[in-house]
Image (cartoon, rainbow, N blue to C red; front, side, top):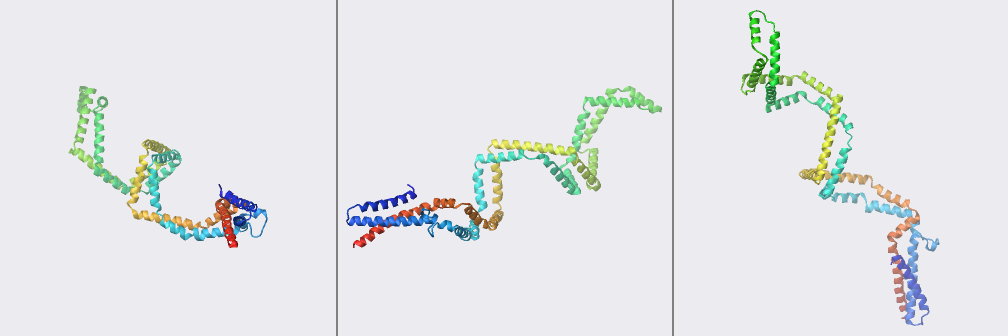
Length: 413
């Protein structure tokens, strides 16, 4: 049973009791009941009038000092706003409560609980894949090219060349390259078609050679004694022997060639004019259309790789997301002073926002109240506090009944 109905029933009970007692035989008990029901009826009606007068005119009659809430709507709103701004939600209380909060720690605990869920990790990967798929790579070509160009323009060419040369010499890259070239040359020399080609070329040159005198006679005699196959075999053997001698780690010719290579490398690393020329050539290559196509193609490959890895990790339950999160947390935990700094900055930022927008709290309350018409305001108040006010009517009737009986007893005495 609702309190509003209960209040009405209490009045009906008092009125019905009073009327019923009028028809009872006159005696002490009837006198007491009449006094109780009469006082209860008066008390209930008085409290009904008082409660109703708060919200509207009783029975629609504009009795003075009734419909108090509507008449004093502006003052009530001002008092409510003032109480919220100066007492309930003042700047000092907001700042004091914020200072007690451990925002970074709380956010970390919440994120840890979220990251422990497989579905959350998979959703993170889904969002990441969606973002990667929507990346406008065609717009990234020019920034990538410009970034590369700016790096090349600003790089210390001499220093870079010196570091590169040191790396090459320390790791023996010039020796590896020299041996690789000799190895490839040896493979080419030992091919059967190479022997045939060399023999044909040598025989052709011998046949066309014009040498006079006795030397010419001897030369022609030698040319007549050999054929294409023999010449090819001789040249192949000589080239192979020469390469083998160069592959000998302690061979004089090999060491001499490597010394010369190193000298040329040092000269190139110290030649600023050549280095600037190389820089210019690289910058020109960067501006070519083929370079833009190359960048776009490789960005697309990078996207495909990222999407494939994202799908693979999602199938595994998104463990990489938790590993990355755990790594970030461990990194943060190793620097408590930095966490405290972020904590202070976060609290400071929130405090500043609260201070700058504190007036909006009262403005929000005022705007919401003023947007309501009288009927809506009364309905809202009755819904929130009307039930408690209705009990005043019930209590008034009950208390009036008890007081009426007491007064009747006093009259009898």
